[in-house]
Length: 396
Image 1 (tube, helix red, strand yellow):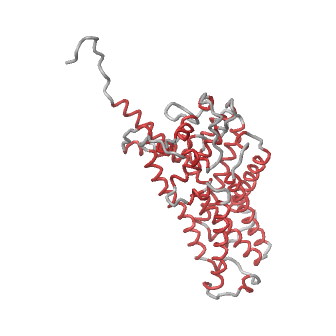
Image 2 (image 1 turned 90 degrees about the vertical axis):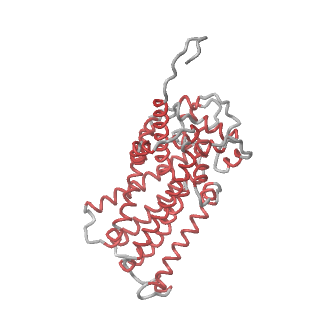
Image 3 (image 1 turned 90 degrees about the horizontal axis):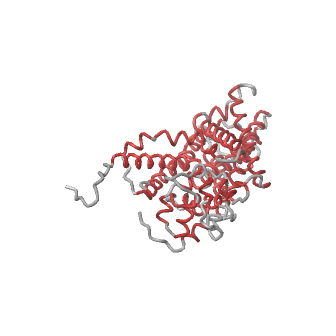
């Protein structure tokens, strides 16, 4: 991997958020206090120094920013208030942009208005597609006045809406897969220049899934509040996964089946997920406004947009559900169009290009790091030990 310094790297990184290297004394307190930092993956100091020295190849090939779980213990320990937590967050945004082959992530995360503008444009496009579908592609096309005045259920939208949903979910999946390949090329063998045997990938295959669904490393952070944070993080991930699962496999039941009473168990699964999607994003927003903990001390637009959109998706989805039970068919139908205009940009933009992508890249990075460490360990074991030769005696 190239170790040549790239002029202007520091300014490039700062496009993605706070990155204060002027206050840093390189004392190492941030690294010492972090329970997740170790000899094979030392941070925050190491990746920050790489950016400062312009070592772009080493910075992009490092996984350390992803191994950080954003607890803020390093910022609490910093004697100069250099905010290393914020620097690590900025580096994660920067790395997302480096992995992204479309370069859209750099527009979304590197501009204060880019993310809002992109989400708004996609939302308007989705609403326009709903209108065009009703005006031109239904079995009995409608006029604009009929669209805003005719009571309709959702049955007429199948199977079109199901096919649309599958496409919307598959697009970010394909994008993330391609970006993961780019991430792999940058990170492995990475800065260790070690040859990775294929066997290491299979042996560590469960690591990504364990961290994707458990988020267990959050519990290793020092402050007690992170135990509660882990619970909320896990519940939010479970609720989002449940909703995506329902949308992918049971969309027709979810949108058309009103036969079961409101107290039926299958209804309550959805209600519990919706309650989580209302409470936790709202709690995050309140925490960032009140700056209750270190990790909420500073907020970039992307830190607020994701919880706001999750909250709006939950509210609009519940509104559709309630008005359907009240038999306000027209209101439900228009609200569903609004719901799609919020949910689709969330999946198409935030998941592959925005802050939500950290839920994917972090467990993949932990997997790559485990593969790298295993390869390094096996390489050291396989190396023959050198025999000690007495001074002044030549070996045969």
